[in-house]
Image (cartoon, rainbow, N blue to C red; front, side, top):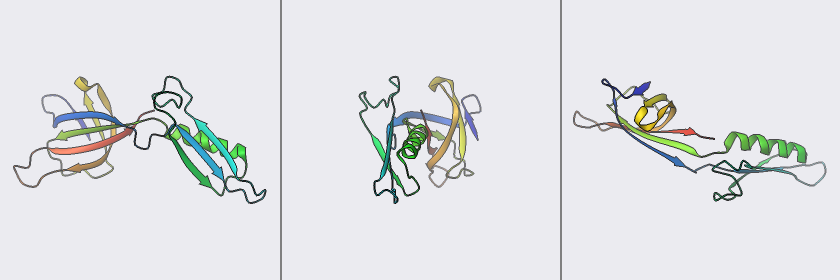
Length: 149
């Protein structure tokens, strides 16, 4: 589905924001090494000074901890920490928009929102939506998410 502003637009309103929920700027990985008796450990941090989640900036240190019995060495733990950091760093952009009710939507649908006024032209994943029953129910409110690096 694509919702774009214009004469035949079903888009009623847009509210855009960011969330730091699940926005980690560090990964601390521990391996359960059964051969040497010592656990393996590795870590990775967001070291990009231009990043809003730079670990030495105002955001501070917000690590996520991960443990696996499959990690046997410090080098493996560091590699896993780096991969997880690249996959998970950044804040989540959240978009809430109202449309003329569309009963075809389901949780997990991908929609494209195009609105020049809000500088939007991208895809979002539907997290939740609500719509009233009946003719006088009004607009359908949809909440989306998109990870931003």
